[in-house]
Amino acid sequence: MEIRSVEELIKSFIDILLAEKGYSANTARAYRNDLQEFFEFVIATSDDDTRSQPQAGLSCPLPELDPLTVRKYLGLLHRRNKKTTIGRKLSALRSFFRHLLKQGIIESNPTDMILTPTQDHPIPRYLVVDEIFRLLDSIQTDDLPGLRNRAIFETFYSCGLRVSEVAGLNVFAVDHSNGMVRVLGKGSKERIVPIGKKALEAITAYRRRLETEADVPVESDGPMFLNKYQGRLSSRSIARILDKLVRACSLMVPVSPHVLRHTFATHMLDAGADLRAVQELLGHKSLSTTQKYTHVSIDRLMATYDKAHPRK
Image 1 (cartoon, rainbow, N blue to C red):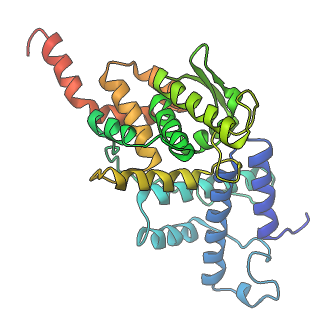
Image 2: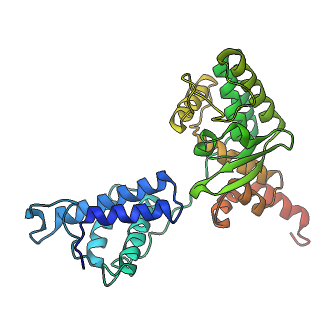
Image 3: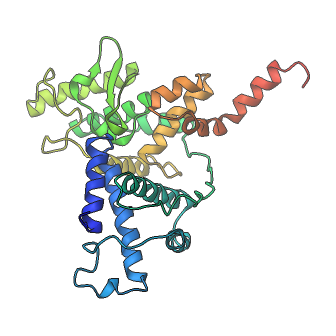
């Protein structure tokens, strides 16, 4: 069998994730970084002469690995990483070694007997209704950037989208007549979610001003939210804009784009929305991912119990 380098094996695996598994570029990049970090550790700490080889580094052949090597690596991670990060890195290793096993490159998976670290389940941070209203109403709409920003964050709260989904939104993805948005989520999976009147009004106002000031036709497709160069606004730029808005309206809690998504989910459940419906709206693959939002709705749960249970 042809001897392939670690670098080549990682590249082949990442190509499969992108082409066949439908993983996003961000997820594939995270997997690549995690695998490179692991093998850099293995090569740097190896007791044999791997380090002295002319092609040392990731260009060397795959080293022999056993569960003890993986445990040593995880022990190092425990000193400086959260359990969620360690779990993600271990998941990347498991997937990679399963791939190598399937290809006949290795005879056993060194991660088979290693348990995933018990995860903490912190309550998601979210804004109460008064806080999210205060944030949205504080966005000035007397110029084009202000109209754009109002449209962006009204859409966030109305639809519960990820920041990458908002950044990736196209004009024709929004169905104004039916109040629906076509969203391209993780793994290029498409879903349809409702969008509220406030968000639609904000989008319409922004696109009309964009046509007047920047000669971008309202009815032309392309990126929904544009930067000053009329290119697609990036996820990072959206996060920076939000940070400025939060400071300007003096909210005393850290707010990220994902906090707005948590806020949407929490308020939906507080208002009595079905958990599975919220799962569909958020685009969660697993119901357990959505269930974490029920922890912040305990007041509603207790009120329902007190009202309904015959023997309190």
